[in-house]
Picture 1 (cartoon, rainbow, N blue to C red):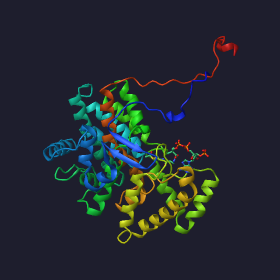
Picture 2: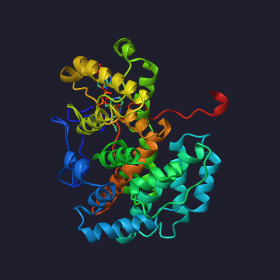
Picture 3: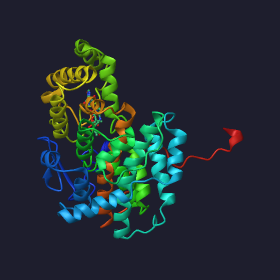
Picture 4: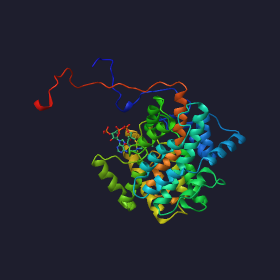
Length: 382
Ligand code: ACO
Protein backbone atom coordinates (compact mmCIF):
# COMPACT_ATOMS: atom_id res chain seq x y z
CA UNK A 1 0.00 0.00 0.00
CA UNK A 2 1.47 3.34 -1.04
CA UNK A 3 2.02 5.97 1.63
CA UNK A 4 -0.65 8.25 0.18
CA UNK A 5 -3.39 5.59 0.06
CA UNK A 6 -5.77 5.86 3.00
CA UNK A 7 -8.80 3.72 3.71
CA UNK A 8 -11.71 5.64 5.22
CA UNK A 9 -13.55 2.80 6.91
CA UNK A 10 -17.27 3.54 6.99
CA UNK A 11 -16.43 6.57 4.77
CA UNK A 12 -15.64 8.30 8.04
CA UNK A 13 -14.67 11.92 7.33
CA UNK A 14 -15.27 11.65 3.56
CA UNK A 15 -17.16 14.43 1.77
CA UNK A 16 -19.10 13.15 -1.25
CA UNK A 17 -20.81 16.31 -2.52
CA UNK A 18 -21.65 19.95 -1.88
CA UNK A 19 -25.14 20.56 -0.56
CA UNK A 20 -27.33 23.44 0.61
CA UNK A 21 -29.90 21.25 2.36
CA UNK A 22 -28.61 20.61 5.85
CA UNK A 23 -25.74 21.53 8.13
CA UNK A 24 -24.84 19.32 11.06
CA UNK A 25 -22.30 21.02 13.30
CA UNK A 26 -21.26 17.99 15.28
CA UNK A 27 -18.65 19.72 17.42
CA UNK A 28 -21.14 22.02 19.12
CA UNK A 29 -24.38 20.09 18.53
CA UNK A 30 -26.19 22.33 16.06
CA UNK A 31 -28.45 21.38 13.18
CA UNK A 32 -29.84 23.56 10.39
CA UNK A 33 -32.37 22.80 7.66
CA UNK A 34 -31.67 25.15 4.73
CA UNK A 35 -30.09 27.60 7.18
CA UNK A 36 -32.85 27.50 9.84
CA UNK A 37 -31.87 26.06 13.22
CA UNK A 38 -33.77 22.96 14.27
CA UNK A 39 -34.96 24.82 17.38
CA UNK A 40 -36.59 27.55 15.25
CA UNK A 41 -38.13 24.88 13.03
CA UNK A 42 -39.51 22.77 15.89
CA UNK A 43 -41.01 25.80 17.58
CA UNK A 44 -42.61 27.51 14.60
CA UNK A 45 -43.11 25.19 11.67
CA UNK A 46 -45.21 22.26 10.48
CA UNK A 47 -44.19 19.06 8.72
CA UNK A 48 -45.73 20.26 5.45
CA UNK A 49 -43.68 23.46 5.61
CA UNK A 50 -40.49 21.56 6.49
CA UNK A 51 -41.03 19.24 3.52
CA UNK A 52 -41.51 22.27 1.24
CA UNK A 53 -38.42 23.95 2.67
CA UNK A 54 -36.24 20.88 2.17
CA UNK A 55 -37.45 20.15 -1.34
CA UNK A 56 -37.74 23.68 -2.73
CA UNK A 57 -34.90 25.27 -0.77
CA UNK A 58 -36.82 28.13 0.86
CA UNK A 59 -39.78 28.74 3.15
CA UNK A 60 -43.06 28.89 1.22
CA UNK A 61 -45.36 31.89 1.01
CA UNK A 62 -48.87 31.23 2.38
CA UNK A 63 -50.38 30.43 -1.04
CA UNK A 64 -47.46 28.15 -1.92
CA UNK A 65 -47.84 26.21 1.33
CA UNK A 66 -51.57 25.88 0.76
CA UNK A 67 -51.01 24.54 -2.74
CA UNK A 68 -48.28 22.14 -1.52
CA UNK A 69 -50.53 20.88 1.30
CA UNK A 70 -53.37 20.41 -1.18
CA UNK A 71 -51.13 18.32 -3.41
CA UNK A 72 -50.03 16.22 -0.44
CA UNK A 73 -53.65 15.63 0.55
CA UNK A 74 -54.58 14.59 -2.99
CA UNK A 75 -51.88 11.87 -2.89
CA UNK A 76 -52.73 10.31 0.49
CA UNK A 77 -54.89 7.38 -0.55
CA UNK A 78 -53.14 4.09 -1.39
CA UNK A 79 -53.59 1.88 -4.46
CA UNK A 80 -55.73 -1.20 -3.69
CA UNK A 81 -52.75 -3.52 -4.36
CA UNK A 82 -50.65 -1.74 -1.74
CA UNK A 83 -53.47 -1.99 0.81
CA UNK A 84 -53.63 -5.71 -0.01
CA UNK A 85 -49.87 -6.13 0.61
CA UNK A 86 -50.32 -4.47 4.00
CA UNK A 87 -53.39 -6.61 4.83
CA UNK A 88 -51.47 -9.78 3.98
CA UNK A 89 -48.45 -8.94 6.11
CA UNK A 90 -49.33 -6.49 8.92
CA UNK A 91 -48.99 -8.08 12.33
CA UNK A 92 -46.92 -10.93 10.86
CA UNK A 93 -43.91 -9.18 9.31
CA UNK A 94 -41.59 -6.38 10.41
CA UNK A 95 -43.28 -3.07 9.49
CA UNK A 96 -40.01 -1.89 7.90
CA UNK A 97 -40.10 -4.90 5.56
CA UNK A 98 -43.72 -4.09 4.75
CA UNK A 99 -42.83 -0.45 4.10
CA UNK A 100 -39.87 -1.32 1.87
CA UNK A 101 -42.02 -3.74 -0.14
CA UNK A 102 -45.01 -1.38 -0.36
CA UNK A 103 -42.90 1.57 -1.51
CA UNK A 104 -41.20 -0.58 -4.09
CA UNK A 105 -44.65 -1.71 -5.24
CA UNK A 106 -45.86 1.91 -5.49
CA UNK A 107 -43.57 2.38 -8.47
CA UNK A 108 -45.55 -0.26 -10.34
CA UNK A 109 -48.71 1.79 -10.07
CA UNK A 110 -47.00 5.07 -11.02
CA UNK A 111 -47.11 5.61 -14.77
CA UNK A 112 -44.51 8.39 -14.66
CA UNK A 113 -41.92 6.31 -12.83
CA UNK A 114 -39.42 6.62 -15.71
CA UNK A 115 -39.96 10.35 -16.31
CA UNK A 116 -36.77 11.92 -14.97
CA UNK A 117 -37.86 15.55 -15.52
CA UNK A 118 -37.58 17.84 -12.50
CA UNK A 119 -41.35 18.46 -12.48
CA UNK A 120 -42.10 14.74 -12.51
CA UNK A 121 -39.63 14.11 -9.69
CA UNK A 122 -41.27 16.84 -7.60
CA UNK A 123 -44.64 15.15 -8.21
CA UNK A 124 -43.16 11.80 -7.20
CA UNK A 125 -41.59 13.34 -4.08
CA UNK A 126 -44.97 14.70 -3.00
CA UNK A 127 -46.56 11.33 -3.76
CA UNK A 128 -43.94 9.50 -1.69
CA UNK A 129 -44.08 11.92 1.26
CA UNK A 130 -47.83 11.52 1.37
CA UNK A 131 -48.19 7.81 0.69
CA UNK A 132 -45.40 6.61 2.99
CA UNK A 133 -47.25 8.15 5.93
CA UNK A 134 -50.43 6.37 4.83
CA UNK A 135 -48.58 3.05 4.46
CA UNK A 136 -47.11 3.30 7.96
CA UNK A 137 -50.42 4.32 9.54
CA UNK A 138 -52.31 1.56 7.71
CA UNK A 139 -49.70 -1.01 8.75
CA UNK A 140 -50.10 -0.05 12.41
CA UNK A 141 -53.89 -0.05 12.22
CA UNK A 142 -54.25 -3.35 10.38
CA UNK A 143 -51.67 -5.02 12.69
CA UNK A 144 -53.98 -4.01 15.56
CA UNK A 145 -56.91 -5.77 13.90
CA UNK A 146 -58.44 -2.66 12.34
CA UNK A 147 -59.44 -2.02 8.73
CA UNK A 148 -57.84 0.39 6.26
CA UNK A 149 -59.12 3.89 6.99
CA UNK A 150 -59.32 6.24 4.01
CA UNK A 151 -57.46 9.53 4.53
CA UNK A 152 -59.34 12.66 5.58
CA UNK A 153 -58.44 15.72 3.51
CA UNK A 154 -59.73 18.09 6.20
CA UNK A 155 -56.74 17.09 8.37
CA UNK A 156 -53.10 18.17 8.36
CA UNK A 157 -50.36 15.66 7.51
CA UNK A 158 -49.69 14.63 11.13
CA UNK A 159 -53.37 14.70 12.12
CA UNK A 160 -54.22 12.47 9.18
CA UNK A 161 -51.42 10.08 10.13
CA UNK A 162 -52.86 9.61 13.61
CA UNK A 163 -56.40 9.44 12.19
CA UNK A 164 -55.44 6.65 9.75
CA UNK A 165 -53.57 4.84 12.52
CA UNK A 166 -56.30 5.03 15.16
CA UNK A 167 -59.41 5.25 13.01
CA UNK A 168 -60.78 8.18 15.01
CA UNK A 169 -60.23 11.90 15.41
CA UNK A 170 -56.84 12.40 17.08
CA UNK A 171 -56.35 14.35 20.30
CA UNK A 172 -53.90 17.26 20.72
CA UNK A 173 -51.74 15.03 22.96
CA UNK A 174 -51.43 12.52 20.10
CA UNK A 175 -50.78 15.03 17.33
CA UNK A 176 -48.12 17.20 19.01
CA UNK A 177 -45.46 14.47 19.47
CA UNK A 178 -46.06 13.08 15.98
CA UNK A 179 -45.71 16.53 14.41
CA UNK A 180 -42.57 17.18 16.47
CA UNK A 181 -40.92 13.88 15.57
CA UNK A 182 -41.85 14.28 11.89
CA UNK A 183 -40.13 17.69 11.85
CA UNK A 184 -37.07 16.63 13.86
CA UNK A 185 -36.31 13.52 11.81
CA UNK A 186 -37.02 14.97 8.37
CA UNK A 187 -33.41 15.57 7.38
CA UNK A 188 -29.87 14.93 8.56
CA UNK A 189 -27.34 15.38 5.72
CA UNK A 190 -25.46 12.34 4.37
CA UNK A 191 -26.46 9.78 6.97
CA UNK A 192 -26.45 6.08 6.03
CA UNK A 193 -29.97 5.97 4.57
CA UNK A 194 -29.60 9.21 2.62
CA UNK A 195 -26.28 7.96 1.29
CA UNK A 196 -27.92 4.67 0.27
CA UNK A 197 -30.60 6.65 -1.57
CA UNK A 198 -27.90 8.73 -3.26
CA UNK A 199 -25.94 5.64 -4.34
CA UNK A 200 -29.02 4.19 -6.05
CA UNK A 201 -29.99 7.62 -7.40
CA UNK A 202 -26.49 8.23 -8.77
CA UNK A 203 -26.94 5.30 -11.16
CA UNK A 204 -29.91 7.30 -12.55
CA UNK A 205 -32.29 4.69 -11.24
CA UNK A 206 -35.69 6.31 -10.50
CA UNK A 207 -36.77 8.00 -7.26
CA UNK A 208 -38.66 4.91 -6.02
CA UNK A 209 -35.50 2.82 -6.30
CA UNK A 210 -33.51 5.47 -4.43
CA UNK A 211 -36.11 5.72 -1.65
CA UNK A 212 -36.43 1.93 -1.35
CA UNK A 213 -32.65 1.80 -0.80
CA UNK A 214 -32.97 4.51 1.85
CA UNK A 215 -35.64 2.54 3.69
CA UNK A 216 -33.49 -0.59 3.60
CA UNK A 217 -30.56 1.27 5.16
CA UNK A 218 -32.69 3.00 7.78
CA UNK A 219 -33.89 -0.31 9.19
CA UNK A 220 -30.70 -1.26 11.03
CA UNK A 221 -30.19 -0.73 14.78
CA UNK A 222 -27.08 1.40 14.19
CA UNK A 223 -29.26 3.93 12.35
CA UNK A 224 -33.07 4.33 12.40
CA UNK A 225 -33.71 1.17 14.38
CA UNK A 226 -31.95 2.59 17.45
CA UNK A 227 -35.09 4.25 18.87
CA UNK A 228 -36.83 0.88 19.12
CA UNK A 229 -33.75 -0.70 20.70
CA UNK A 230 -33.40 2.14 23.21
CA UNK A 231 -36.98 1.66 24.36
CA UNK A 232 -36.55 -2.12 24.55
CA UNK A 233 -33.60 -1.49 26.83
CA UNK A 234 -35.76 0.77 29.06
CA UNK A 235 -38.38 -1.99 29.30
CA UNK A 236 -35.64 -4.51 30.10
CA UNK A 237 -34.40 -2.21 32.88
CA UNK A 238 -37.97 -2.27 34.19
CA UNK A 239 -37.64 -0.27 37.38
CA UNK A 240 -35.73 3.06 37.48
CA UNK A 241 -33.65 1.80 40.42
CA UNK A 242 -32.14 -0.87 38.12
CA UNK A 243 -30.87 1.65 35.57
CA UNK A 244 -27.33 2.19 36.81
CA UNK A 245 -26.63 -1.51 37.35
CA UNK A 246 -28.05 -2.45 33.93
CA UNK A 247 -26.06 0.15 32.04
CA UNK A 248 -22.85 -0.45 33.97
CA UNK A 249 -23.08 -4.18 33.26
CA UNK A 250 -23.82 -3.56 29.60
CA UNK A 251 -20.82 -1.25 29.27
CA UNK A 252 -18.61 -3.68 31.16
CA UNK A 253 -19.68 -6.33 28.65
CA UNK A 254 -18.65 -3.94 25.80
CA UNK A 255 -22.26 -3.52 24.70
CA UNK A 256 -23.37 -0.32 23.04
CA UNK A 257 -26.17 1.62 24.66
CA UNK A 258 -28.68 2.41 21.93
CA UNK A 259 -29.64 6.05 21.56
CA UNK A 260 -26.13 7.27 22.41
CA UNK A 261 -23.22 8.19 20.20
CA UNK A 262 -23.12 9.54 16.70
CA UNK A 263 -20.71 9.59 13.80
CA UNK A 264 -20.97 13.37 13.47
CA UNK A 265 -22.20 14.73 16.81
CA UNK A 266 -19.53 14.79 19.47
CA UNK A 267 -21.83 17.00 21.57
CA UNK A 268 -25.45 16.73 22.69
CA UNK A 269 -27.70 16.12 19.66
CA UNK A 270 -29.97 19.21 19.53
CA UNK A 271 -32.93 17.03 18.48
CA UNK A 272 -32.52 14.89 21.62
CA UNK A 273 -32.62 18.10 23.71
CA UNK A 274 -35.92 19.16 22.13
CA UNK A 275 -37.45 15.70 22.59
CA UNK A 276 -36.27 15.54 26.21
CA UNK A 277 -37.75 18.98 26.94
CA UNK A 278 -41.07 17.86 25.49
CA UNK A 279 -40.97 14.67 27.56
CA UNK A 280 -40.44 16.71 30.70
CA UNK A 281 -43.58 18.75 29.94
CA UNK A 282 -45.56 15.50 30.12
CA UNK A 283 -44.50 14.66 33.67
CA UNK A 284 -47.78 15.67 35.31
CA UNK A 285 -50.16 14.49 32.62
CA UNK A 286 -48.68 11.22 31.39
CA UNK A 287 -49.40 7.64 32.35
CA UNK A 288 -47.49 5.75 35.02
CA UNK A 289 -45.69 3.85 32.22
CA UNK A 290 -44.43 7.05 30.56
CA UNK A 291 -43.33 8.51 33.91
CA UNK A 292 -41.40 5.33 34.69
CA UNK A 293 -39.76 5.27 31.25
CA UNK A 294 -38.88 8.95 31.62
CA UNK A 295 -37.19 8.35 34.94
CA UNK A 296 -35.19 5.45 33.50
CA UNK A 297 -34.23 7.62 30.52
CA UNK A 298 -33.11 10.51 32.76
CA UNK A 299 -31.06 8.25 35.01
CA UNK A 300 -29.53 6.53 31.97
CA UNK A 301 -28.74 9.88 30.37
CA UNK A 302 -26.95 11.13 33.50
CA UNK A 303 -24.90 7.98 33.91
CA UNK A 304 -23.87 7.87 30.24
CA UNK A 305 -22.93 11.54 30.16
CA UNK A 306 -20.90 11.23 33.36
CA UNK A 307 -19.07 8.19 31.98
CA UNK A 308 -18.74 8.87 28.28
CA UNK A 309 -20.00 12.38 27.49
CA UNK A 310 -17.14 14.87 27.60
CA UNK A 311 -14.48 12.14 27.83
CA UNK A 312 -15.52 10.12 24.76
CA UNK A 313 -17.92 12.43 22.90
CA UNK A 314 -20.78 9.98 23.38
CA UNK A 315 -24.01 11.89 24.06
CA UNK A 316 -27.71 11.13 23.66
CA UNK A 317 -28.84 11.14 20.04
CA UNK A 318 -32.29 11.71 18.51
CA UNK A 319 -33.32 8.13 19.26
CA UNK A 320 -32.83 8.05 23.02
CA UNK A 321 -35.85 9.97 24.30
CA UNK A 322 -38.06 9.22 21.31
CA UNK A 323 -39.52 5.97 22.71
CA UNK A 324 -41.25 7.39 25.80
CA UNK A 325 -42.61 10.25 23.66
CA UNK A 326 -44.12 7.84 21.14
CA UNK A 327 -45.56 5.73 23.95
CA UNK A 328 -47.21 8.89 25.34
CA UNK A 329 -48.98 9.22 21.98
CA UNK A 330 -50.11 5.59 22.07
CA UNK A 331 -47.76 4.51 19.28
CA UNK A 332 -46.41 0.99 19.43
CA UNK A 333 -42.70 0.25 19.37
CA UNK A 334 -42.43 -1.41 15.97
CA UNK A 335 -43.84 1.68 14.24
CA UNK A 336 -41.01 3.96 15.44
CA UNK A 337 -38.58 3.22 12.61
CA UNK A 338 -41.28 3.27 9.90
CA UNK A 339 -42.36 6.67 11.27
CA UNK A 340 -38.75 7.79 11.02
CA UNK A 341 -38.94 6.84 7.33
CA UNK A 342 -42.26 8.67 6.96
CA UNK A 343 -40.45 11.77 8.19
CA UNK A 344 -37.03 11.30 6.51
CA UNK A 345 -38.64 10.78 3.10
CA UNK A 346 -38.58 14.58 2.65
CA UNK A 347 -34.81 14.65 3.20
CA UNK A 348 -34.18 11.65 0.95
CA UNK A 349 -36.11 13.23 -1.92
CA UNK A 350 -34.46 16.65 -1.42
CA UNK A 351 -31.00 15.06 -1.52
CA UNK A 352 -31.60 12.86 -4.55
CA UNK A 353 -33.09 15.77 -6.48
CA UNK A 354 -30.16 18.00 -5.53
CA UNK A 355 -27.62 15.30 -6.45
CA UNK A 356 -29.23 14.81 -9.86
CA UNK A 357 -28.59 18.49 -10.68
CA UNK A 358 -24.93 17.54 -11.13
CA UNK A 359 -24.99 13.75 -11.06
CA UNK A 360 -21.92 11.58 -10.81
CA UNK A 361 -22.04 7.83 -10.34
CA UNK A 362 -20.99 6.94 -6.79
CA UNK A 363 -18.37 4.27 -7.10
CA UNK A 364 -15.68 4.13 -4.40
CA UNK A 365 -12.67 1.82 -4.43
CA UNK A 366 -11.52 -0.96 -2.16
CA UNK A 367 -8.01 -2.17 -1.59
CA UNK A 368 -7.74 -5.74 -2.85
CA UNK A 369 -5.83 -7.93 -0.41
CA UNK A 370 -6.43 -11.34 -2.01
CA UNK A 371 -4.22 -13.37 -4.33
CA UNK A 372 -3.91 -13.06 -8.12
CA UNK A 373 -2.98 -15.29 -11.08
CA UNK A 374 -4.08 -18.50 -9.35
CA UNK A 375 -4.11 -21.59 -11.54
CA UNK A 376 -7.70 -22.71 -12.19
CA UNK A 377 -8.20 -26.25 -10.83
CA UNK A 378 -10.95 -28.38 -12.41
CA UNK A 379 -13.71 -29.33 -9.96
CA UNK A 380 -12.78 -33.05 -9.78
CA UNK A 381 -9.19 -32.16 -8.86
CA UNK A 382 -9.85 -29.83 -5.90
N1 ACO B 1 -22.57 2.99 23.81
C1 ACO B 1 -21.35 2.63 24.27
N2 ACO B 1 -20.22 2.84 23.58
C2 ACO B 1 -20.32 3.45 22.41
C3 ACO B 1 -21.56 3.89 21.88
C4 ACO B 1 -22.70 3.63 22.64
N3 ACO B 1 -23.91 3.98 22.19
N4 ACO B 1 -21.36 4.46 20.68
C5 ACO B 1 -20.05 4.41 20.46
N5 ACO B 1 -19.42 3.79 21.48
C6 ACO B 1 -17.98 3.51 21.60
C7 ACO B 1 -17.65 2.28 20.75
O1 ACO B 1 -17.79 1.09 21.47
C8 ACO B 1 -16.23 2.58 20.34
O2 ACO B 1 -15.41 2.27 21.42
P1 ACO B 1 -13.91 1.68 21.19
O3 ACO B 1 -13.18 2.75 20.44
O4 ACO B 1 -13.42 1.43 22.57
O5 ACO B 1 -14.10 0.43 20.38
C9 ACO B 1 -16.21 4.09 20.16
O6 ACO B 1 -17.26 4.58 20.99
C10 ACO B 1 -16.48 4.51 18.71
O7 ACO B 1 -17.69 3.91 18.27
P2 ACO B 1 -17.97 3.47 16.77
O8 ACO B 1 -19.19 2.65 16.73
O9 ACO B 1 -16.73 2.89 16.16
O10 ACO B 1 -18.11 4.92 16.10
P3 ACO B 1 -19.08 5.32 14.95
O11 ACO B 1 -18.75 6.69 14.56
O12 ACO B 1 -19.10 4.28 13.90
O13 ACO B 1 -20.45 5.26 15.79
C11 ACO B 1 -22.74 4.94 15.96
C12 ACO B 1 -21.61 5.85 15.49
C13 ACO B 1 -22.83 3.72 15.03
C14 ACO B 1 -24.05 5.72 15.90
C15 ACO B 1 -22.48 4.45 17.43
O14 ACO B 1 -22.34 5.56 18.29
C16 ACO B 1 -23.55 3.51 17.90
O15 ACO B 1 -23.53 2.32 17.56
N6 ACO B 1 -24.54 4.02 18.72
C17 ACO B 1 -25.63 3.21 19.16
C18 ACO B 1 -26.67 3.08 18.04
C19 ACO B 1 -27.45 4.36 17.84
O16 ACO B 1 -27.92 4.99 18.78
N7 ACO B 1 -27.61 4.70 16.55
C20 ACO B 1 -28.42 5.88 16.17
C21 ACO B 1 -27.53 6.98 15.64
S1 ACO B 1 -28.52 8.39 15.23
C22 ACO B 1 -29.32 7.91 13.86
O17 ACO B 1 -28.82 7.18 13.05
C23 ACO B 1 -30.65 8.42 13.62
